[in-house]
Length: 147
Image 1: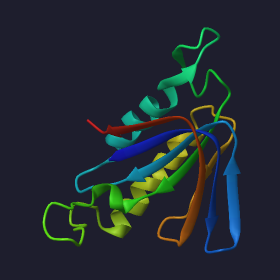
Image 2 (image 1 turned 180 degrees about the horizontal axis):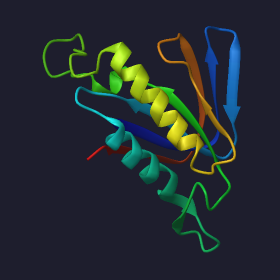
Image 3 (image 1 turned 90 degrees about the vertical axis):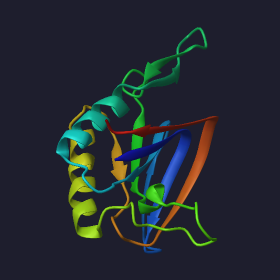
């Protein structure tokens, strides 16, 4: 699994031009799943994400987690995190897990993050047409791959 994490002032996802889900101060996280990923990967990443110290403390040092700052999380599935642009001009998506496998693990990951104690966890809808709006804070962006 791969996470692309952005520290945000605000973020939202509009699903199929209808339903909008939003968060304030926290993280917008794009979630990609590849072949061979399992619940162990998802558990490790959920713990890593919710404990990642990317927020400033009173002295301006990046030293606090999303839990420490009472922040919120928006999770959005993103199969293109496993795209390869090495050959030609059209990305290859062969490293992304098949949709039925990826959706199960994405849903599991969402539930693990929701159980972490974060007060507001919102998410997109797997496979839906989504518009994501982000007000990046920093900007700070991180990529984490599962072990």
